[in-house]
Length: 147
Image (cartoon, rainbow, N blue to C red; front, side, top):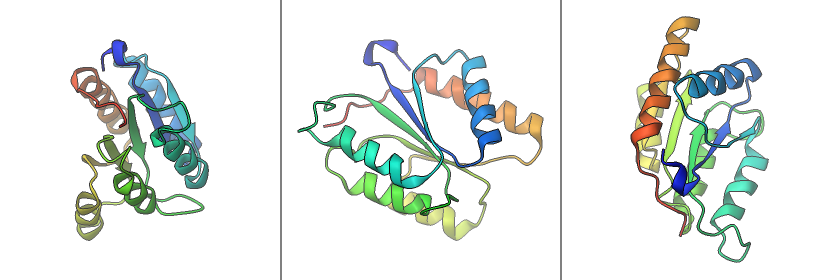
């Protein structure tokens, strides 16, 4: 991701070990963008809705969401739905990164507008490698600003 847009990565992940592993391996891939972490859905939704609200002064930033589906207070699909229904956030890339590999759940996420769905590998080294590859992908992708 180009630093000129100052893309903020919003990570919504309730497993502290996974969150550390994700951040460490994104950094290893050379991504130095700000990462804002949330361990539950409610504060993440509040943050994102504020980012997409043109009246808050946050308007115009570029964000990318890394979203786990299994959260303690709400399902990640609800966060995805709210982001994609918000006029100022609907173009924001959302990468679902979860242990859930149920085909119906994958289809539901794509139907709701997720951009990429990744099932977390169970094996530590495979998980770390997958996140490093995701970080390399982040370095070349273009992220629109919120509108």
